[in-house]
Length: 621
Image 1 (cartoon, rainbow, N blue to C red):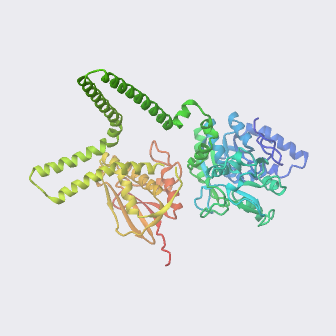
Image 2 (tube, rainbow, N blue to C red; image 1 turned 90 degrees about the vertical axis):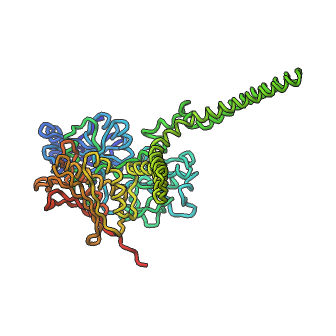
Image 3 (tube, rainbow, N blue to C red; image 1 turned 180 degrees about the vertical axis):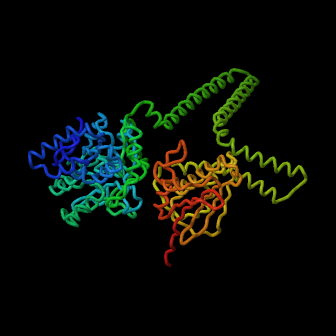
């Protein structure tokens, strides 16, 4: 069913229909009071006439707490888009889960705001694409805010751990709700508890407060809530502070609410496949420039690998096919047992054939002279030796491709070192230091290939952010190992001036490497057509004012005032094929670490990009 742009306020509509609420620029005053027939008539007239005068953009939003709450939560976003793009009219359409899927399928909306689980499902089914992700500025990490908590009435015999839910009734809003069920389902699966082990799964429907009502009425023994709803209900006085206890509570650093699950990225703002790229780009730029409201803002689209992992583990949504057992799938899953069985059968056949041959040979030997018996025994022995030889050759043939694949490149480097040592010895020189260095080079080359593979795999992986104590000189060296080859092919040298003994900083290694690689790429691009490109790119590290600063300087044309004023804005770029997100994301990463990223033209020519990260204070002993 096509969602309506504006309807009169009230409770949630029936399942699969939009919730009642009107949002927009012109309709807002009309929706403040709808008591008189005249105002109702004016509203209906506005709904019919407005599309002729405004280019409408419809934004569907999952209203898991009712249409009024959804509209209130996202009114600042719609108002900001209306101010940023006055030529467009933005209308918010609150929907339930089925309504979101139906609206996307019918393309009756242009953008969608929904939970991360529903987004992954829509992405797989309809090709929607995320443009931005919500973030909360009141905890770290700011984008991981979706989680669930299991609560039970605080009385004797209540469940303590998630495993204690076995044989009990569990209340959830719906069996397809992400934060209201599937997040906890994954945690139950981790402790070996399946939905079938419960006494029953009680679906209460939206809003989520109905789960608490089911617990109070005794219809369930425990219930699943989204993170922070428990604290909100207590703060509003609708729950007693000790009325409910948390089941299977997890320790989550710097998160303000009690949870029973791991954290997932917050809600995405996504566009449908048929939306104009120009409109999508304008909306994205507006969202990323929006100031925080009540501690929440929009940031660059985050990695939803963790959500995919949940669906894959539970074999639902895009990975539902994994739950279907096929002959080929069963063989892939149990190939080692099938291989063992075939080997056993093959061995048995060979054994039977061997025994039969020996019996026949022995029987024939008894009827012949001693000479014939010896000849038969000699023939059987030769036969066995040849068979064993062929078996060894077959095994070697099977292993040859794997051995060649794994050892080819390191062996080439090892061969070079070995030939160097040989020429050194043939020349009559027995320099122990040289031979030792050569031997170490052989060992180092063997390790180098494995180390490079580990390094590349660690860099490209959507993982969760992980802070650790880092030496920035070491991070610079590791980053150059990935980048120096590209710079060398372009004929641009890279020079590093490191300050020994720099204090450590607390940072995420992969994110800081991402910032460095982006700055180095920009510096090399700036010098491609420069006559003084042989001056290269310079990297300096030093301690400045309680922080460790890294400077990347090129000898390119620098920045003019017009470019400098917009350098860190999203989608601003001077490259013909650039997206304009690199420096914006770099600044977001550095500032999330409590640091700063700046750019300045240099007196001798070129541009210096500097970022500084605060030095980790030592704890008193």
